[in-house]
Image (spheres, rainbow, N blue to C red):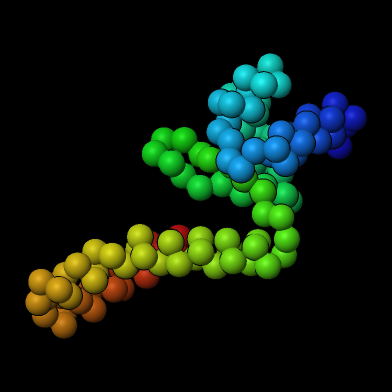
Length: 116
């Protein structure tokens, strides 16, 4: 990793240490980077589990987790969120009285989507 890359990554982490949540646009404006460049740095930090994000409409909201317990909680929360998004159509159909054959097909389809 080049020295410039380390400096920018450290600046991003420093900015995140003072804010609860920030957007890619906000970081790009503060550091004088394009949004694409800022996004690449943020994704690299995300791969290293130094920052995390949540989708907020078309944007990503970035944050850090201050300790291991909080990180584990956030990772579990993300898994639950994915599960709910994937299976909510199935649960909706159950409430509507969908028959078991259709339910099995819906679950199979949702499982395939979840695994990809």
